[in-house]
Length: 70
Length: 352
Image (cartoon, rainbow over all chains, first blue to last red; front, side, top):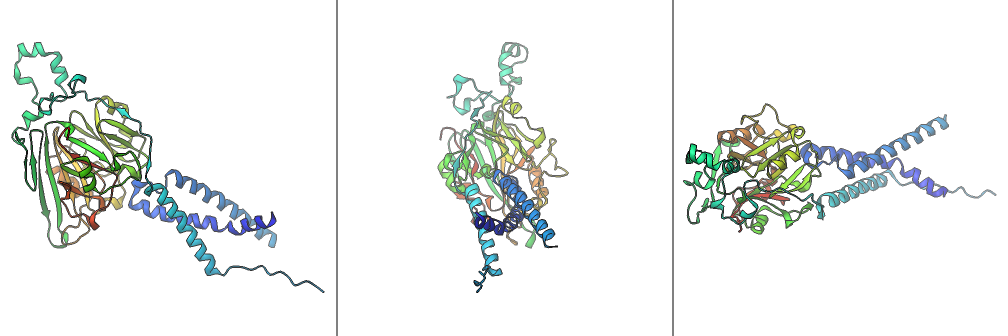
């Protein structure tokens, strides 16, 4: 269980980074072809949730780690 | 003796970067594949809009006998009065009578024109400007005796997402005489899709909407002004969501367009305009090929329709999608040989 948690924590910072890059791609594509709704379709909305939740989790962990190291 | 400390092996930075890039590409690829490429049928609304100009028992009437649009029902109700008071002068002409100069008793087809008792169109190549500023576009001037000669066709003859075909393929499959790219409804989740008198989708959208009614009139709407119930009640025959509208309600070039700035720049374009009920034009502009045709801005595109005498005009999918075909072959020279799209607008003989 601890190993699994450790793996999750190691993956955690990569997730918001990956989804942020995906959204940058979507926003560029959306600029050229807004009718395709790259940013606002159903799947993108799920991606946005993942980005938000993992960003918060990653930030909380970074802040906690920073405080405990002082 | 102390046991050797277990070392926590870490991946090198380059490996982490490669893995992150690969995962990003996989997610993006999976999304594109599922959302835009793999065909999947969708449940249409299937609201059938009846033609208010044709009685239920007159469905098999030959197009030449089609009662005149709009005011005919009213005229029929007051038939006796009009006959005694003001004879035939007030009876509106049918389209066949109105466009008799353009229609022919037999089918006459050339490389650039077609005429029959129901349909007449001629395709003209036009150029403007010179050198790197040259614009090349194709205008199909269309007269119809029956609105049902103006049809639409969906790729794979199926309503859904991801169904795509080249315009010449759909031209052949639908039996069209003349075809042009439509609004690429299959790339959108929202908006209005009305095809050949059936409402397939009627969701809110932030794009302009265009409706062709059974009486032959064309109306364009801003997203907030559109009401599907009203459109159905008025006899909506075709409905598209792409745009923007190219002319305002007075037939003038609008001050601004409901489109992002990138879409207003020079581009290959396809669109259609209504000169009067029964008289339409398809206009495809080639582009992205300096010296042959640079494409047009939305404002220039509006000007083309205004110069043609249109009272309403609407922009369809452009870029590589901008394709017009006659007899299953390209009329224009599409950028990068065109691409497969999800629907077309077409002219065909009724019952063909």
